Each structure stands twice: as C-alpha cells, then as structure tokens.
Image (cartoon, rainbow, N blue to C red; front, side, top):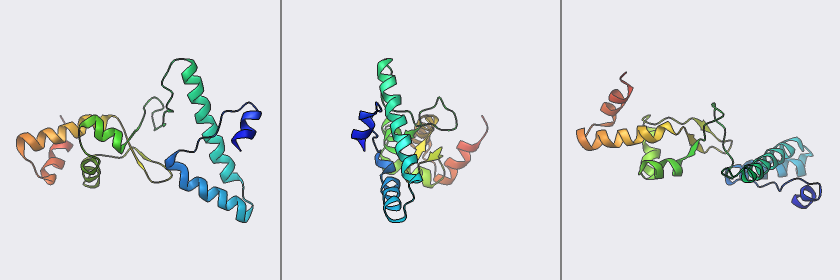
Length: 148
C-alpha cells in the first residue's frame, strides 16, 4: 500500500499505535465484508498526518502531528506526556482522572485519554494542596471547584 502511495507522489501512511485496533478492524471488514470505506478513511487520515509532518519539517516546525481538540491550536497531551510535564506518575494522573480531579479533553477512537495542557497546572495544584494541607479527595474536589 505504501509503495503505491509513494509511486503516486503521496507520503507513506503511518498508522499510529492508538489507531491500530481500528485499522485492523477496518482491514478485516474490507477482507470479509468487502466494506472498504472505513479502511480508506483511516488511510486518508494517516496520509494527511504524514503530509502535515513533511510540511512542518519543511517550515522548520515540529514534525510530530498535532492532535486536534476543540481548539485547533491546542496540542492535546497523552497521559504520559501530562505525567512527565506535571512531575507525576501515569498511575497518579489516572487516579486523579478517575476521581474527577482532572478532566479528559478528548478520547481517541481507541479509547486513549487526551488532556488539555491546562491540566498540567491543575495537577501541580493538586500535588501542592496535598503537600501543604494534606486534603482528602473530597476536600480537593471542593477546593478545586471554588471560584477564585
């Protein structure tokens, strides 16, 4: 498939890890049911991301494609990126999310949580409150939801 794309002057379609399950399902659907539209859609998105990467590189911008959230200018963070930026573990970020202290901005089709960069400051605030005031989860929720 990628050879055909390259021969026709398109960049390679790189399937991201978070899209792998959807990609395999689309391949199986095309093979067993003859329904190719889901496959074409995934490949189209992958080629577009690759092309964006090439264009960014040519303009000396970061090559990593930006995952678009509600605000097109915001790069959403994966849980590991948020954890690293906030100085926390992924398990802590996951726990705080499950407890409603951090909000997921968007979930990928594969179910991966993506966070608004504002959650970095919120995670740091949670940690600071835990250190200085040793608040419970319920107390943290009340404190974080108070208007400032």
